[in-house]
Structure formats: C-alpha cells, structure tokens
Image (cartoon, rainbow, N blue to C red; front, top):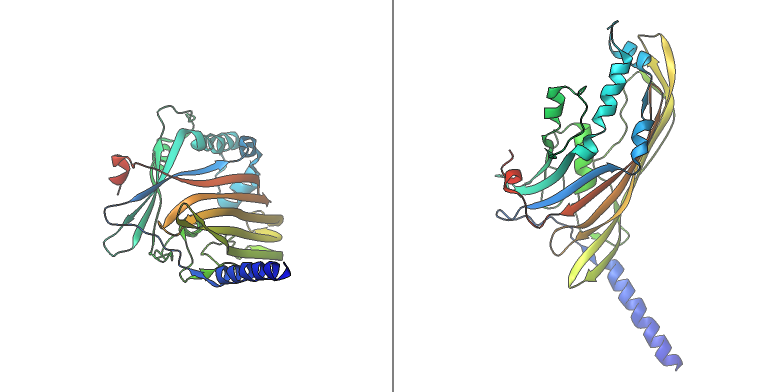
Length: 295
C-alpha cells in the first residue's frame, strides 16, 4: 500500500514538474482574410464615481490660461457632459493584417441611436468621439510595432494587446510598455513607488485548447508638490494609478478568450479624482462591414 501511495506521489510530482517547466508561445493568430474584433468596454464600475472628479477651476485656469472672462460653471458642465460617453457610444476593437505583415489594432467608437449628450458639448468634440479612438500596430509575437504612439495611446495598446515576445513558463513575469504617470519639471517628487508585473500564473487545457491565465499587477505612485509658476505657489499633489486583473488567452487560437481588468485612479491637487474603471474585451462572432471599412 505504501508503495502505491509513493508511486502515485511521484507521478503527480513528475507531472507538476513537467508542466511548470514547459514553455508556451503566446502569439496572435490573425489571417489576411480572418480579422478578429472585440466589443470593448472601458466603463466606470460605479457611475457615481464620475461625479467624484473635481477640479480647482481657478487654479487650473490660472496655470494654463490668461483668460479673465472664463466661466468656471461652464467649464465644469462641459466636463460632466463628457461622462455620458460611456452610455452614448459603443466601442469595438478590430485586429487585421497590414501590408507589412504586422497587425493593425483599431479601437472604433460608434454613436448609439439614442444619446443624452448635453448641448454644451461642441459639435467638433461630439464628432471627435466617433471613429477611430486608438490606432496602433503589434506583431505576431505580441510586441508593439508602433513606437511612435502618444503615451496614453501606448498604455491602452499595451494593457489590452501586448504579449510576451518570447516563450514563457508558468510563474514567469515580464513587463509591458505601459507607464501611468508623467510629470514635467514643475513637479517636485518627495515619495514614489512602482510595481510592474505581468505573470503567467497557469495554463489549462479546456475542450482541447490551451488557455493561458495572465495576471496583471501594475501600480504607479508619486507624492510631492506641483510648482505653479503662474500663481507663484506650490500645490501638494498625489497620484496613485493601478491596473489589476487576470485574463485568459487562448494559445491554440491565438486570441483572448476572456479579458478583464480594473483601472483605479486617485489624484489630489489641482485635479481631484477617485475612480475605478472596468476594462473588458468580448469577441464578436460577426464583424459589421462598416467597421471593416474604417480606415
């Protein structure tokens, strides 16, 4: 009996050792005639959080403008009206091959039939919220090709579509091209911290397909003072931005099976923000032709 138990233990240990030492190549599989599209959500977890975005209007305007007849109430109304974006627009991300054998990533926003947009939103801004909102390129290996992107755009591309460019084993960690905080020379930093880990935590075979479970644990934090040269004073400023989640990548088919993450942001100073935002990608079985035609 003891021999049977020992043999069973050795088999289980061997299987575990084999699994943890096996490497997996996480690659996108996008064919020329087979684009992939994901219904894309970047929604506030609690809609009440949107009202927790506060701005010291006088300090903000003094820092960036010499306008003396600016109405702060109009300014606040304008920003609050932008929040209706989450309910008035739907977003889809389309992945397709380009002429250089890279993968084009386009996040496309479409206005819903019914809208609650405030009249205070200018026409140019309403038009700007439709069409392509993110445009980048990745390669098959998951690396980012579009090095020329703005920081905010690069962050979105990285957290949703960047993959490790080399084979990884369970327990391996890597970084992505995302950095959530950026300040100029007017910010004096007194305290800071950063955690930037993306990890392959497990691989399971489900219905004959290998599914990789990827954990995101990113946090950027600074605490200091913003030197306002227009007001001649310093404003205590704190920024704490994090992204966390566990998502499932289908290694066999080369695409997300299930993608979810939470972005949390706390900022105090000229602008006061305390929000949480859910990111999710759900594959579409059929891609509307009008989205495939968007350049």
